[in-house]
Image 1 (cartoon, rainbow, N blue to C red):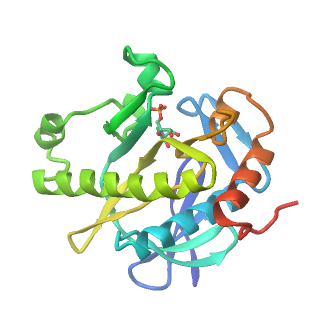
Image 2 (image 1 turned 135 degrees about the vertical axis):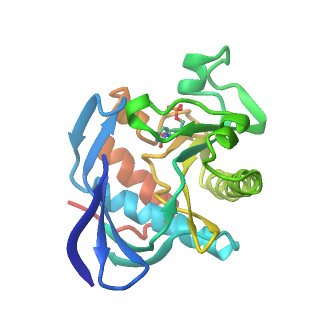
Length: 241
Ligand code: C5P
């Protein structure tokens, strides 16, 4: 079903047109970047593990009635997804203070955020994804007030689903980023939900199980991604040698 037309190539994924109307092909590459592209690398198998975990979570969300762009798996690093009109916002749900929250605001690393905090950034690399607030989002006419409410409510529901599931696996969901898009005016989860977009800590040891391992040279990135992907999916991911 692949038509070779490349539509978009991001830092870690490539989107192709498909022959089927309304569908796109999303390829998870082995590229890994951090710090606004300031650190770059390639890790064999990384695309496969992120694709596998994203698929697992998309199916989980769909089973809970939360619409996503996931349609079907094409191969171990490629999905068929619904073509969405993407909303240029990064919706970050935070259960525990870490990362930029601790760098930019007087939070203590590890501070529990109860209720969870939603941070919304503008998806705009040229401006380094600045943080927005509701007034700015409405003034910029990015979404309507009703759509913004739907996005936030959905993000919090997803947080509850993922947090509970991961805690049963001994993993603490510190924070994660979502992107949404619209199809026929319906708001759906797009992009990916993977080790690249989540901050995960081993509940017992506090060890990082996500892209922070790459960002801060905390250990072997591929061993971490493979181990956590297998832990999350119960061994469903294809092993990449
Ligand atoms: O860097 P920061 O602490 O703001 O990141 C919060 C969460 O959002 C992390 O899980 C990070 O991996 C994710 N994120 C992302 N893409 C971005 C910015 C943050 O996936 N562009």
